[in-house]
Image: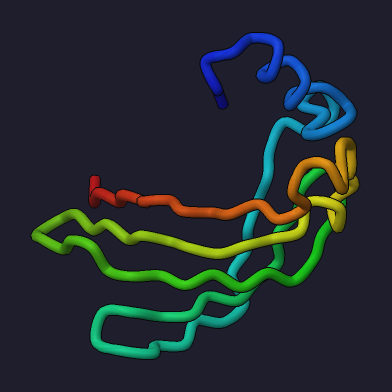
Length: 107
């Protein structure tokens, strides 16, 4: 993770937000995938961050598929206070917007 500003990066990595010294990973384990259109789906699961787990839902859109590779755009919002990352609220938004492109390649 990098914002390009070392002061901001250090704050985000601190125990006030992500606490990367103690929690080096954020994980998402899907529990249900529901196709909503030809190339779209809703993905439900459990998001774990900073040692706290909660249900989370994301929208996925197929971006590219070819022999041996695939790409999805994944969108969703979570409340950071649910994961003990409440420093700066309400001055800074409690909502974290996810907009990711995930690439997979068959090896």
